[in-house]
Length: 269
Image 1 (tube, rainbow, N blue to C red):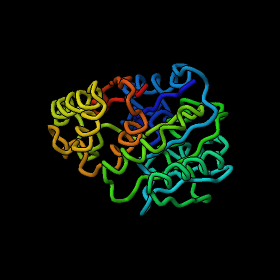
Image 2: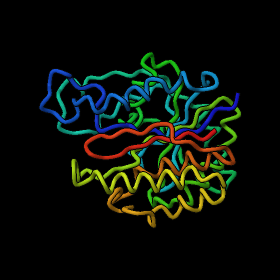
Image 3: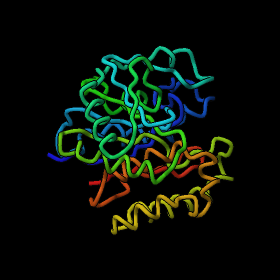
Image 4: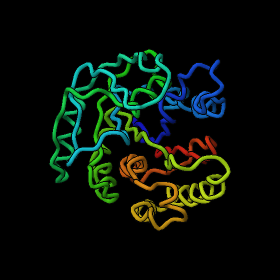
């Protein structure tokens, strides 16, 4: 069956794996629980179990699009200042080199020069949400980078190029955060982040696919856009998922409040 395309929030650092006995750390708060519950139900909510996952994370940028074609990537602990046990997490899912090749083929056919890489570890935009969604690490995963220029139209077009994978049993996942301004928390973020999220949701769920894409390509014209994303790398995975969603309806599949931020996830198809 045709798989949807998803944009998911991946949380903050290893937030879902903090010691609950450490109430002093903001990432140990129960406010992350609704997001964790959403991620834990991700696979069960699909039309059928995917044969593989293509995931683009807000934590990997390369000059042009790059696919990770390794067979057993290690973990890249690219977060800082967390308890020692969070640097000993394991998530041993297999890579998906055949899917990486197929994704590169589709991107190249669409005019995107695409590199391959096999040594880099999976960053926390991959293994943190996927460890919640797939605790048994039993679905192969291939990672796709962002393009370093962060061109929204190019990432939407790349998603469109990858859309045939959905008919091949592949789940396409954009992993980022719909709000990502680490300098603001609490009350000062609450109202503008909600206004931003309302405007983003209205654009993403526009019933006209062409208008939806145009509105999201111009995301920086939405209210509080640069407050929500001083730099947009955590929003770009949404562009890929939206492009892969094509003509399919879009819904807001998750909404929660963490650290004063309103954070959403989306499903296409």
